[in-house]
Image (cartoon, rainbow, N blue to C red; front, side, top):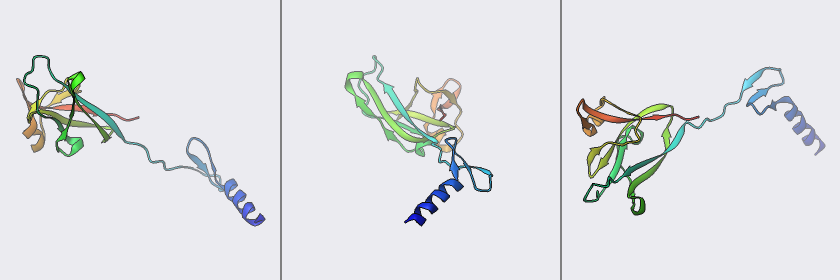
Length: 144
C-alpha cells in the first residue's frame, strides 16, 4: 500500500498542471493541454405577427445553412403574438445564410445581420424578392 501511495505521489510530481492548461513534464518542457473548445451556440429565432396581418399564419419556419436547408418549425406564443424556436449547437465562427418562411413563402427577419445575393441552389430556391434582386438573410455566428 505504501508503494502505491509513493507511486501516486511521484506521478503527480512528474506532471504538474497549471490553471492555464499548460503541463510541465518531468523533462521541463511545456506542452499545451488539448481542451475541446465549444464552437456551437444557441440562437432564438422570433417572428412577430405584424399588427395589420390577417389572417394569422398557419405555419412559420426557419430554413438555412445551419439546418442543411431543412425546415425547422417555430411555435406560436399567443400572448406575445410571436412565433419562436431555439436552435442549439449552431456552428460558430462563421456566417450563416437563412430565410424565414411564413406559410411557405420567404419572409424578412428584422433581426438579421444583413442581406446577400444567393449563391447555392437552396439559397436561390428560398430567396426573398427585393428591388435589387433575390436575397437571403445573414447571421454572423460568433462564439467566445
